[in-house]
Length: 461
Image (cartoon, rainbow, N blue to C red; front, side):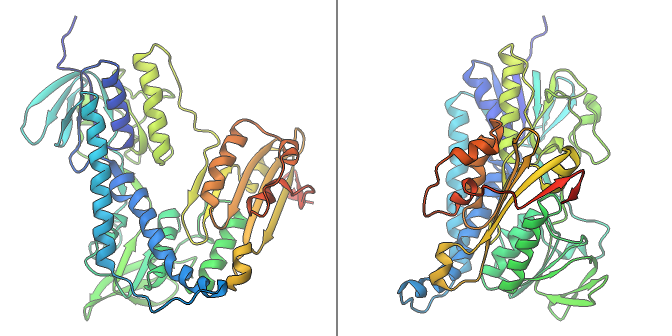
């Protein structure tokens, strides 16, 4: 029987990698995990967590404005970008420490080095040049922003990574992209007082979301003063007189202090030694895996964003737990990628789970669509003109709720709870039998008794 240095070697210290390493170590396996940058991965270090902290910071100017409608007199306010950065950095350092503490407590060996595959069972530690062997290897190296190398002047632009570490808050920014990262940062920078332009090649932002929410958010962002240019792309970026000149396809030349590219993410597989180990990748460079997250090499698995399946932190953690069940508990378990709740932390927020109206119309012969648009109670005294949208998509034949979509305050929190209901297969009748909590925005989800309209054979009737 072949002897290895480790039972499990994990490459990548993000959410999926840390979870698989820690749980395997708790089960008594000899485990090592290598990370070349910082433990915590994209989510903790340069993604979800710092982004949400920035979202909170960006909301305060509206809170101050709203307070007047409730009888408060708020004095002169000012914002200090450097204080926000310092506070964010302290919190990220604390969280990274917790990740390491969890690994150490489970007796996993923590390696702070880049690791590359030599063959199916051998890994080279780049900092020392040492090679080690492992019976099983997990690749969890995540993804990175697409640098859009075809764009002349791309080297003058930043990505979401650098947005968390800018020395100064810019006076103006152009953000290229229409996905959730672009939309969230457009709202963040605008909320902090930055003149913000969002430029997107598509007809409407957030292409994978329900059309009503996409349009509703676009209108709300425009009303706040965010300039959104759809059907357009960046053609060239250059530096002129200390600022950046942005040539666009359809809107002439724009000028900004900072240009941010949020044009998708790509898998972190370059130079990883995958070819030497026999691990196949697709045309985008992502690791190809089967339904159990196993690569083309039987003892090597891949988890999270590096597989380019669904790029969400909870998905990577779920895939890690399925790997543990499959590899170490004699319980082959496939990750369940269906009906995943998600949120866009824009202002207002989007929370969504299940099928959009467009997707459901292609899958089901007849749909009932329940839609409510209303002014939230808080806005009645604040005087803010924003509207909430709530929408349920129902398969008319069995009355099963197949999609739920919300635009408005706390939409992400509501989507998490709705995720349980839709995962359980609840019907519209279950929603109708549920007593409302009043006064809340969420009560609309259980008080929309009559369909707003129907979709039959993909046509609204």
